[in-house]
Image (cartoon, rainbow, N blue to C red):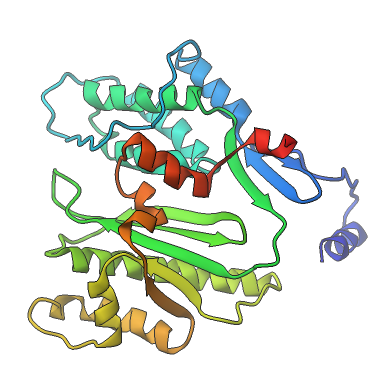
Length: 305
């Protein structure tokens, strides 16, 4: 497919084939026979130098365990311009560093009036990056082209307004291909409601990914399996009997159920300890963080082994 595309382009444009890609828009790419590794090591080092953190002491996690921050924190304000520059740089790094995605997304909520506590938390991420510069995304040769997804939420996790955040991650073959988070528009009255809204966001992403893959000649011939760690969500999908506590999420229930009945999606339960989207919902202790990070990121050293 790639060779045919190149031939078509050459017939229309004056082109030179430079061979395998090594660098594109700040992304560094290493390719071997059975591996592809994508990282932003150079950009990471540039960011550390820009914010004078090249000589900082590395730490093991991007955010303190169970850290909660607020817009109304009494600590002094810092330069909003400088804070936005740092968060902007970190957002760009999340393209190949899903392990910092939660911390960066969380801190981006405070860009309007950042305080000292928010600035310190942002520099905490830089200290983590200092000790993990060579991490990136590794994709191994694999015959499995089917999507698998994980959906999770942090019920009432925002201490300013008690809104929850939807998180998801999708894998194809050996590595993640899509991940994201979105603050929910409404306050959820139960963890089941928060999880169901999150599952709805993940189903939208899954349908979009399935269409893209089919357009690329990678048809998804079976339902995309999506894992959730809330049994109440599964019960609602299988038996959508609405009562006063669930009537207000009826639309979400019907949306998910429709795609289940069309065999686009199948929901399965997984224990919280195996919920790979957990790393996108909250700051974790080191042992749990490193466990889930291993599913997402790899070191460049693995390419040389």
